[in-house]
Image (cartoon, rainbow, N blue to C red; front, side):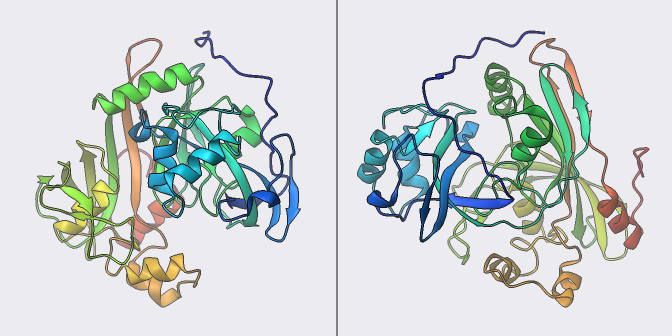
Length: 367
């Protein structure tokens, strides 16, 4: 199987790679004179070693101008300032110096100068559940981000897979899971196949099924049809809430098993909004165990975000050390064979232990 041809500009210097498990953050607050030229690999500054960091563009951001994207996501600089940094080559796409008017494409790798910071530990035990010449699917743990972001760089799933098996530039992200959500995550092995699957996601041709352990007794199968948008009442800027006039959002949920004070739920998102399942389940009175942001109290999230370790009493109140949400199955049209492909990621050992703790029955042949 031969992937479609991909063009690469080999005249540009390669992106610097990390030699130790440290995170990077965008070098966005440093003065221009502190930054190295485009051909320098690194520079010692008071902020630490500076190297190239990267993040991959989501389907939701495809088609947006690069300067507009940066100004929207990183509001402490103006669009004009970002445009100047792009022209200087300090922000690139796939190792190429481009114009501020460049229109982003799904799978583009945005690269920027970054400074190193201590990197949190992660659970990189993410076994392969499906692989062929075009696709890779792994069963992601509940403590690893999919791509480099924030405090996580080398300790991200994409870079771990690149470093230990596949090499740089082979795998392309086509969808995401939150760091604390476990389960099936899909990569393609060419950007063309990534675009094909992104088209399927955008046109709702892909079916996803999740497992969630929620507080309370969810009585019956139901469709949750509630619009989502930014939660203006939350102290957390990225928090999503039920917003009249917000984006239409629908999730089908049904109970699978009842335990002590909890229900094991199957959830099928019929739309693809940020944090949709978590917000919808909370909205009907059944928040997910372990959810620090949309669970019993968002103060747990603020405490965690601020670097204060949660106590054992905190985790006992939350019910689980991370959100009890698992991407169980995904069904796609294979980008090459065009046949229907269903990939399943069985619950991992920590979820099985949670099922046992609350006396939940789960029947899929893996528990």
